[in-house]
Image 1 (spheres, rainbow, N blue to C red):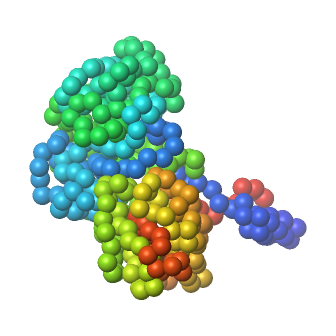
Image 2 (cartoon, rainbow, N blue to C red):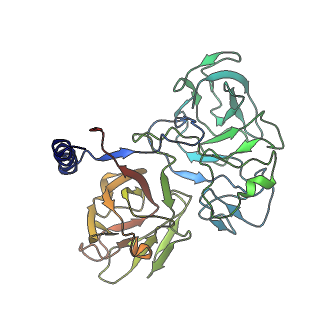
Length: 364
């Protein structure tokens, strides 16, 4: 490389660095090239994860989610044997095809998955959209070709459902009663063999989401639920089932040291975008301060929780500490500086989205 080209290379790097144009979503490099969009628009709390250990509604010894975490009971990863994902949403929320395909089945039922649609995709995979509303649930017919993002129906609470939500399932083959072909569209990130290998067709789940930055779910997201592995709580807090993962903590503002800490599993040196889930209730603090440990020490971000309702709220983009990765944590204190007892601090899940450094111009 000649001297002029070296100078130009460095200059481009400096300009990119200073203008902040050096971040890129790396999630489109999925190993299997799958490109599912979310089955809904907007953001909705995730109330039940996919259970990698025997996902056919059978009771077993616990819930194994895609991060490799195992819990023994419902909270915060309801529930044992669950062969899909549940997102809580108001009845009548539009539901969209996750990718191109043909409507293989639509059914009206008062039991099981209730009113539902199954779409077969070009490679033989299927997607299931269940518990659709009772009145006029479908916007497609059997045999109809649909494109990714086409409106196919509306959410509801038909069948075996305790409240309005969408059950979404993804299958590497036909949808059958024994769930033999079900897989996890979030893949598997555990440090041990995917338990799903011992069930059904013996496959390992791979992440299927298209993972563009506007999507609320992505293959490069790591979610750390409150009450899950990596989370610790100090002080006196109340609990509620309205949060992401069907669980959250909350308490009134205080002058004490009550706090929660999320420590981040398998996070390495790099650029990450941080989010906090703010539920629609039990979060009225206008000065909730999130502390994030970075390569530069603690960074503090203040969020007005009162103006958000069931959504991921961005805290910022930070570089984490690879030298002391055990320090990579997020903390939220109930001591917000507001008068004691005047507001409610909502403490729910945090999410970390991976980014990478890049140079968009190659200079030879």
